[in-house]
Image 1 (tube, rainbow, N blue to C red):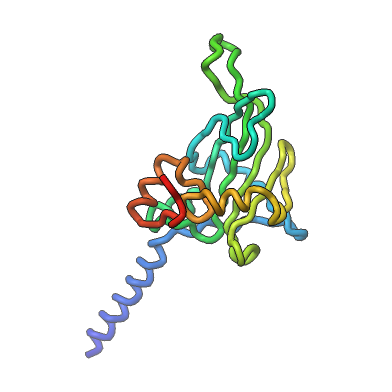
Image 2 (image 1 turned 90 degrees about the vertical axis):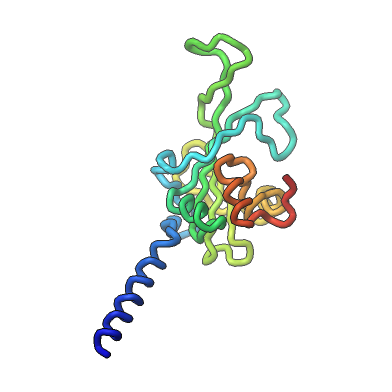
Length: 194
């Protein structure tokens, strides 16, 4: 009887250990005492999801300029998404906007584009303890700030993401490695049209 009890206890411990490893947890975002998000210094070492050029969510730039948007997500959040098709609490996306340049060094054509000067940095954070009603919040750092206050709910990001995002409030439709995951896991928003 003791052997069965010991065996059962070992199975339970192993099951708990395996369960705790099934969904990686993203580290909690860091905030200042007055509630500003601290820009993660290592975000450029995170998973690079995609780069878009000329992605406008409002009116196009008057000068016709098309800039690059580079999207990064924390590796633990990325791995959790691969397993579940959902973003875990504490997911942080960093969006880096850079100028699109065409003439410089060896590139002399007017068609080719490469990334140059930093224009601004933004972040999207899933944190149920800070934004329980919508879970997601948005922040704008500019080009040289280490902290950013949460944008008010009247900011355009909230409406645009809630109406147009493929999964939760995220634009997975622009991340070619993740859209198939969302399809396979059945986590695409019901309102999302491909």
